[in-house]
Length: 264
Image (cartoon, rainbow, N blue to C red; front, side, top):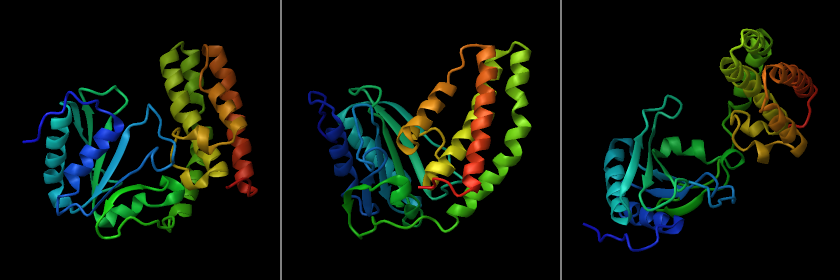
């Protein structure tokens, strides 16, 4: 067993060091790196720890067990979430941890991926530059965007062209019925989310599918300001007014995409 270290401050750096000490000696683990805010060079006091290790899927449980034992020695694990298998990333296993002696933001998001799945997370334009903790086999290196990226983006754009005008009555109907909870919910899901998608297609197509994440970094300042103002309807009448503005912005953005606009 490892010595208990509760008398030491549990900082971001001490957690990362602890993870390296747990993972690096394991023969199935061929590499480990930090992604998320670290990969974009903008980690701050609210950033979690996005940790990825590379190894065979059939030994992921052993890797998780080794990491958890080491973390437990640093500070008791008070929350653990085991994610179900993902159809999007079939060769990825993921767990989240919260330690007792940290604040609520210093969460550990730990993924074990196979070498085959690894390339999904090594596109610098989409995921930044990973901070390599160790790499026994030289696996961590940049790769180009997936070849079907543009096709997937255009497929989503085609869906939004058809679906957006069909579903704008949902929020309006809920307002007229006096159900503001439903109205705001469908306004966000069927108006603002597709709006964000097309804004991304115009201004940041490499991350067209990132939703509301990173909008303040990926979209121009004025676009972000407009979007922020649309996010917060004050009442039913304000929601209806914002719905019209959002629909106009959606249409104008699609026209700009068709005209070959920003597309940075």
